[in-house]
Length: 134
Image 1 (cartoon, rainbow, N blue to C red):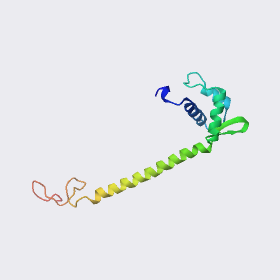
Image 2 (tube, rainbow, N blue to C red):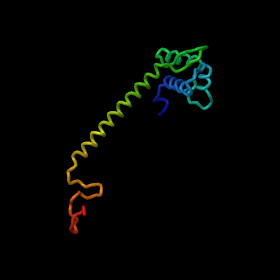
Image 3 (spheres, one colour):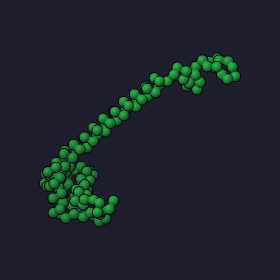
Image 4 (cartoon, rainbow, N blue to C red):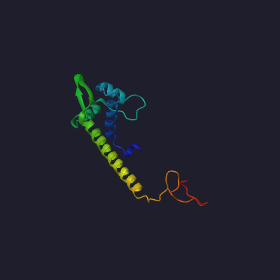
């Protein structure tokens, strides 16, 4: 995706979340700043912009400031992942039930003369004559 198709400030905020989620330990603004601006990164951010990003995410309860000016991910961000996890659990359960119903429907509709595990219906006669069950 080209840079003209993205929102640069949002991308920087996402980078901050990724940095804070790498080891979940509180980090200093300086540490975050240095990691955002290390050589080879596509996005560079000023110290002032970083503070604005952190304060914006703090208002949304995505990050929180703790002892000595350190920053960490906050419960507001985990609520999003908890909601997604619950949705995926519910969807998996729905699909399991759907599969089980389909499985039962397939086998309950099978005619009595359906082939057995050996490949032939029970009690049928072989083309060469005689009973297959012999």
